[in-house]
Amino acid sequence: MHIFDYTFLDEGLLPAELVNLTSAISALNAISEERRGQNATVYTELEKIARIQSVKGSNAIEGIVTTDARIKEIVEGNSAPLNHTEMEIAGYRNALDEIHTSFEDLRISEQTILHLHQVMTEVAAYEGAGQYKTDDNIIAEIDEYGRRRVRFSPVPAAETKDAMEQLILAYIDARDNSHINKLLLIPCVILDFLCIHPFADGNGRISRLLTLLLMYKSGFNIGKYVSFEEKINQSKEYYYEALQDSSQGWHTNENTDTEFMKNFLSTLYKCYKELDKRFSAVNGKKLKKSERIEQTVLNSVLPISKSEICGYLPDVSPTTVEAVLGKMVKEGSIKKLGTARATKYVNAKHIH
Image (cartoon, rainbow, N blue to C red; front, side):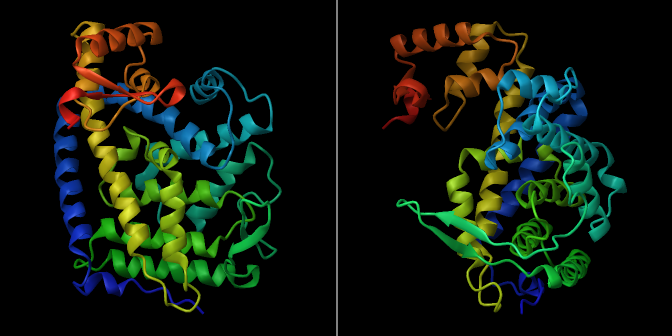
C-alpha cells in the first residue's frame, strides 16, 4: 500500500540539479512579474496566444485533435462544438478558464478536483463526469508487434477515495511546511495523482489542469502566458519516460520521484525562457514585421520552426515568415536544419 508522504523534500538530500533549477525558475518568475506590471497590454496578447495553445496541446497529448482554425474558433467562443471531439476541446477550455480567472477561490481539495472533472467533461456528456471511477482501470501500451501489456496498475476503484483523501492531506502538510520548496512539491503531487488514476477517463488532462492550479497557488502563473501543456506535448515521449521511471515501485513505496520532478522543472524552465522570447516578439511590434521575424529567430537558443514563429507572431502571415527565413538563410545569418515539415532554423552563431 502506498503511503503519501512528502517529508523527504525537507531532508536536504535532493540533487543539486533540481535545487538549482528551482532557483533559476524563481528568478525568472520575479522578472516576469515585474514586466507584467509594466506591460499589461503585452501580457494580454501573450495570454490570448497561450490559451489557444494550452487547449490544443493538452488535448493533442490524448489524441483529441482538430484543425488549428477550429481550435481557435472554439476557444474564442466564436463557434459551438460540432462533434464529440470538439465538445471535449470546449470542456477543457471551460475548466482552464475557471483556473485562470478563479484560482484564488479554488482550494486544493477533492471537491475542487471533482468539480474540474465535471466542468471538463460535462460538455461531452460523460457518464462519469465529476465522479471517481467505479471500475478498476489499467494503463496499457502496445509494443512494436501490436501486443498489449499492462504498463501500470493504478489504485483499485474501491480504494480511490481513500487514496485521494490521503493525497490531499499529505499535500496540505507539505504546503504548510516552510522548509519544503513548493516547486518541488508540485510534481510529487501530480505523480501520485496519476498513479491513483481516479477517473475512468480524463486523468491526463485533469493532471495538467491541477498542475496549473498548484502553480498558481504557489505564486507561479506562467501557464497563463505560455502553454505548459504545449511544452509537454512537444516532448511527450520524455514526459512519459519520466512518468514510467518514477512510478516503478510506487505501490510498495520503492519509487523515486526524481525523474518526474526533473521533467516538470525543465519543462517549466523552458516556459519561462519561451516567455522571454515571446515578450520580446510581441513587445517589438513597433519594429517592422521582417525585423520581428529576424529577432525571433536570432534570439532563439534552440532551433525554431516556421510554425513556431507564426505562433509567436500571429499577426504576421506565414508567407512573410517564409520569405524572411529564405532571405536570412541566403545571407548566412541563420542555418536551415532538416527538411520538409521537420525543417527548423537556428542562429548561425549557435552552430559550431
